[in-house]
Length: 238
Image (cartoon, rainbow, N blue to C red; front, top):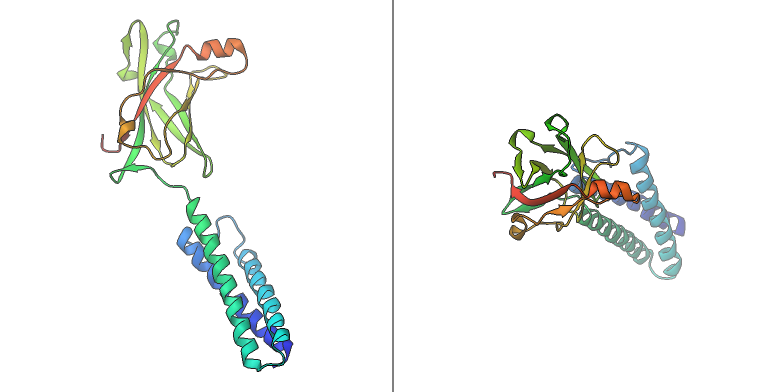
């Protein structure tokens, strides 16, 4: 069989195999045939073209190498290497995508929430200006932002300082978590949470009181340090 025909056959098989690998990988990772936000035509065509080019290259190389042997050997070797390369690359890429997929942390199969208590500065203004919301930002595997809800109706006073409980859903298994409290000032108090990506039952105990992180400005830093927080993880049914 001429080199051109062997290369063309391997190229066609490569394009078909790449298309199937693209669809199966997306179905496994995303539950959809197309990557999110990508063009429904041009995105798969790009991978089809890569498979076609790979097959043409391998088919031509095998045909040239075995041109003095039987044509069947060149075709079989070309098809085998073409399919093997696409399976290896497709499987490796799928495995890499699976590893970095966002995951929800659980304990005993139950989703987790962050329960926290915010302790206000001693000189904080009256009840009319109590903070009532914030945001939990998770960095890693993409940035995820969850609303943090504070409940001033359940506030308590301890040692002359107001304590407000709150909660936020833990939706990502990532170590970098930041809780921002919107108190009507800029910059607002911010807390870096020392939680593992996948909390355990040991993290269901309350932490000690921790100060907010201040900015570069010394005045902002001093104001932020007036806020303190303690926190723990709880399961969704608590």
